[in-house]
Image 1 (cartoon, rainbow, N blue to C red):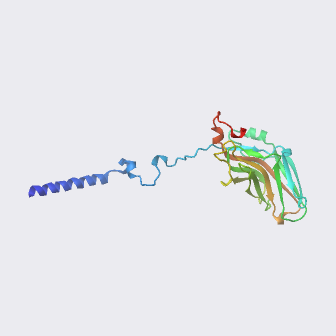
Image 2: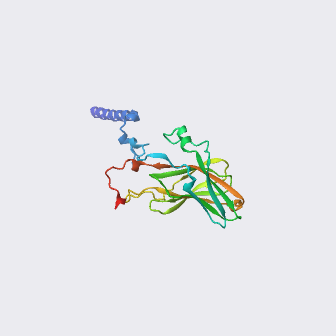
Image 3: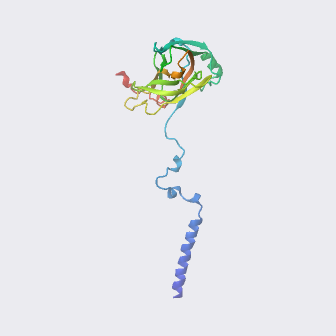
Length: 250
């Protein structure tokens, strides 16, 4: 009887000792696979972005040639004229790989627009390139330096998506003095890519439209533009196979 009691007591001591040793084991010594809860990300993938992107800021237009741009306004509302002027925003930064000297040499002029209002009205006017400005890759943002002259007008950029559908994206109001960099994010509902049409991607800039505040539509108004840029994802363009066929050649 005593021998049986001793055996049972010994077994209990072994079990309690094993349990204590397991409780004392540091968490670092435990296999991560045994402690990972269901639904948690794999530890080696935490903080890793799986998306393949090559984002780069690129120049779309420096507004050096006023003959490339045209102004449009209803004659009942007023008159618009365009002209280039020497100058540049002091806070403008060079592109990646571009020196300050190259920036100064390649960007000497800005585009100015003079608007002569006939009467107060709900009016608009636009500045458009003679040809659409395509942006390579998948555009994330569009930016442009503007002198707004502290009025409550609204500036928009009109775009064509991958299939030529028109979209209107706000760049911001013009209620500021001096040069200011206005930036617009391209919303995801604007189609820029389709796996069935890999040779036809991106968007094109068609025009810049200013919608006026009726209280500000009197006298003469001046506005200036410089350095149109875009941040675009060029991964597809830079990694396309040289021997891949072009669908648009049919």
